[in-house]
Image (cartoon, rainbow, N blue to C red; front, side, top):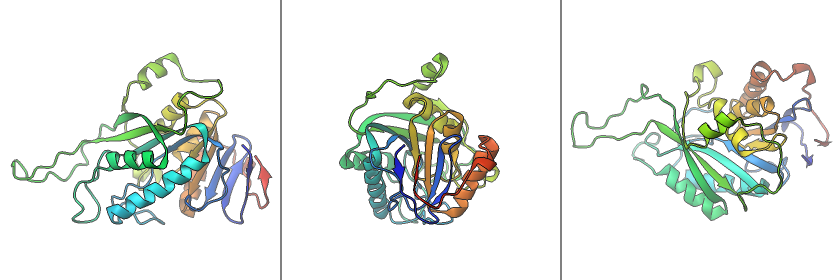
Length: 280
């Protein structure tokens, strides 16, 4: 993957067994990932809907949230190969969080910001979680005065850096049935249990699994700038991709490591914590 500079306490762990690395750092400022080294990003950044993360304030003014979005999208762009792609899981709109903020057009705003940074738009996948029982806000109940219309879906926006067609032809591991089903831009599968995973906003491994098999070759390098509970790296380990995850919170790095061991069978004995620069 190239030389990744190391700093004390920043590389949380790595394993050569399945080429997986967790970096405990702020994605905006980390220098541990080489520019133009990433084939695919699969991530779900903070939604700014007042989720109680350990180390991130998820209820900032919407304008500040968009500024943060532009910064991380710009950093991600610099890390991508010319034919690199990104699968960005975000809400369609925002109806929770800071009081008085109202409904915000998150999807449209982020697409515009990504284009400003240089990302090229390819398509959008609608993820139907099939979970409407959690809805509690109805606006004016049984009245036309001020009803709320809330879509129980999220989106996965597909961007690319400079060219959509891959420069090299690698090995794909997607099956015929998977390809036919997943190229339909409406995906229906359940979300992940917060209580089960131990994280306030996990996404199921099924999401990065589909993105990785559909948009990358075996052996490609996949990055998740907001690793959280580690779902993207679990999918990488199971699908023979090199995986790099970054998270600002040490406890979430620990959680991701634990899930890798339990769910992806990454051998605990083969994990090591480097203290010097290494080729990977």
